[in-house]
Length: 321
Image (cartoon, rainbow, N blue to C red; front, side, top):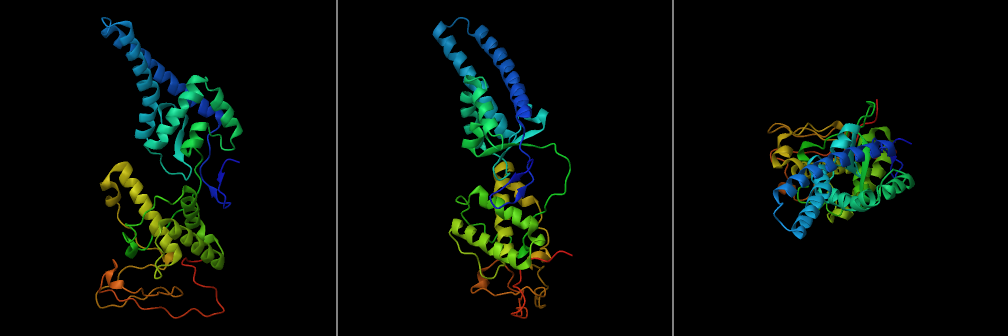
């Protein structure tokens, strides 16, 4: 199967790279690294001809480690998973949840790659890729990464709706370090497909994911926020942190916050003196201590009429047309 399927039976639109394309990318990377190693080593040997044999040997070992080990690690870190060979073959290294890799991922891949690619001439890497269902070598398994194809036919992918604007920055203080990649993937896939689910099933799934996320962060979900909006806001906070790490603090601040979709029951702040009324069917429960929230104090929110008992609870999203 060309798509990744998670434990929740959700298809992820990432296609693992096949062994031939990965082998070709590795050969191209090794060819470039060996050429650079020979050129630099030759220049260093000529420049240090007056040194003794022991010093020249130490310099050769240092050049080997720097160019054949540190070079690929630096290239994958700076290019976010795309080396020269992978760029030529249309491949990219990503995390298990589809996000960009960081230095620790490239470091683990590079160090283990010395053993399974350089020292064993790629035999261990080929066997591990053939055994793995996703074609991962040992470096990918220990680093939690995956090599995927970027050049795939254009298909309609799911869109993650943005959270309501009144939730912007509300979860900036959450500790997201304990949230596993599998839970992030489940949240992202739920948000992209929530309008295709049955309302009652979607509501229970959102509550379960919100409970799991709150258990990992150590902070209970707020009572005045629908579960789907809570998931979207925390996911956006995580993406903003990833953008700040990768591109600097200005990258996340430059993007304007889009208007809240009706799927979450969010709305735009009403003018001064005009009460805010949520959309029909989306109850609003005011939270104690709301004066300390990020909602403007001049915006008055009023609860919507209660939902009849014979109807399923509000799901926090609009059903498909």
